[in-house]
Length: 256
Image 1 (cartoon, one colour):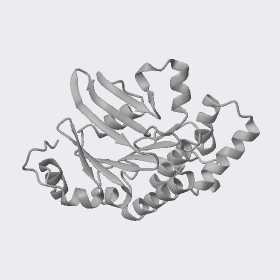
Image 2 (cartoon, one colour):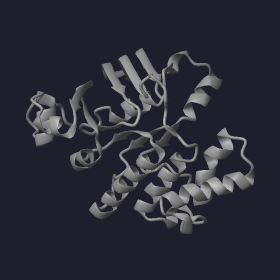
Image 3 (cartoon, one colour):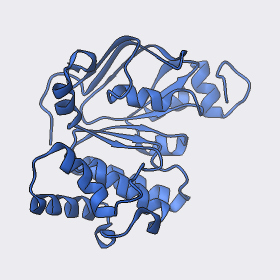
C-alpha cells in the first residue's frame, strides 16, 4: 500500500479551529510525510483530538487549509470527500464500537457502507482484519464480552477494513494496564510495517510517545509546538515542551 504521491500525506496551512465559540487551535502549520509516525502530546483539553479530527476532515477549520494526499478537504464535493475518506482509518477514543453488533459486524460495517463487496468477500476481509489483531476466535462475541484491550484491538481491526493509507489513533492505550499497553503498541507498530501506513496518534503518555514516534508535536495554549524526534523533544528548550516533559504545574503551559 505504498503511496508514490509527491504530496505529503497531510499538510495544515494556517489552520484555526473554533468550536462552540471558543478558539481551540490558532494558526497551525504542520506537515506529515508518508510512512511517518507522528505522535501528538499535550495536557487534557488542549485540543489534541480536535487537531486529529481536523486532519481527518471531521472538523472544518474557521481559517486555513487542510490537505490530505494533496486534496483540500474544504474544496471537495461530498462524493469526493467520501472517496478520500476511504484512504483513512480512524480508531476513536475507547474504540467507539457498536454495542449492538458483534465483532464480525463491527468490522463489516465500513465495508458495507463504502464498498460493493459481496458477502463472501466481506467475510474474508473481516476474518483477515480480525486475524491481524489476534481476535479471530472472538469473531461472534459482543463488545461487552471483550476485555478493554480486546475492545481496543477490535477498534483497530475496524480501522483497517478499508486498507487505509493513513490511520488516526486517538489515545489507543487509554485505560489499559502496562502489559496491555505494550502489547497494543507493538501490534500498532507491526501493522504499520505490514501495511506501510502513515500513523497519527494522540496520547497522554510520554512513554507511549517515546516508544512510537518518528516525530512528536505538543499541543498547548492553542498552539502546536513542533518538538521533533524523541531525542529533540527530550532536549528541547522550548518552555512549553520543557514544562510538559518535566510534568511541572508552574510555567507557560496551562493545565486543566
